[in-house]
Length: 117
Image (tube, rainbow, N blue to C red):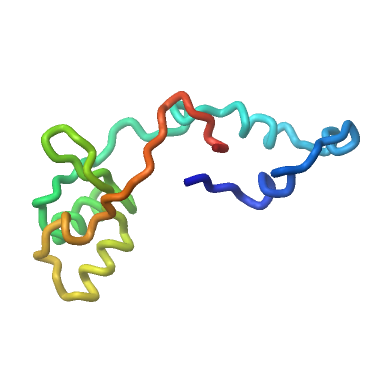
């Protein structure tokens, strides 16, 4: 899944003329050169599918994060987000397992991929 902001969308699918190219800012140019490894977090909080959503709440609060990967036997099996946590709270199910609320269909990227893509 690709996410682009409005500045990136204004050139998507367009032929860039010399006149338009003069208006591309250095920031926009750098965005296309920037690699994931240059902006990614390296010390991450990892959760397991059998942990309780109550533990997710505490982990998010303690680390001041809004999402975390879910790993089982060293393999990435999902991601849990603040939205998932909210769903568990709406269900009054903070003792429910992460596996019940996590997103398991995830898209991964490599550290040498460009941030823009």
